[in-house]
Image (cartoon, rainbow, N blue to C red):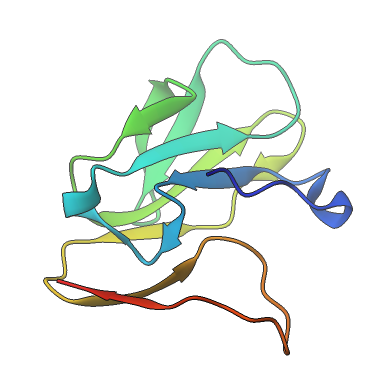
Amino acid sequence: GWCPLSPADAQTTQLLVEPPWIPAVLWDRVTLTCQGSGSTGATPWYKDGRQWWPEGPNSFTVTESGTYTCDRPDSGLSPPVTVSNDELVLQVPAQPLLEGDTVTLRCRG
């Protein structure tokens, strides 16, 4: 269920969401994985704009709602991913979408 990187994204850090739906919701047991270039023994994570886990793992299961980003040595900060604790959400697949694409929406509560 991973969203593959497009060639344009090859040099940027990406934050992969599993299950691959946006917005992510805490009650789905969301796993975030930091993907980018540059080797590192630990991954710096940021939550709500502040450094949150300076030497975290490359992947983890989210236990608190918030907006997360990660950092990779050669490709920088990822775009943010928000994990909410909303009781009702309208979700779209976590993949790039273009005008004219057919997309499945799901309403969940």
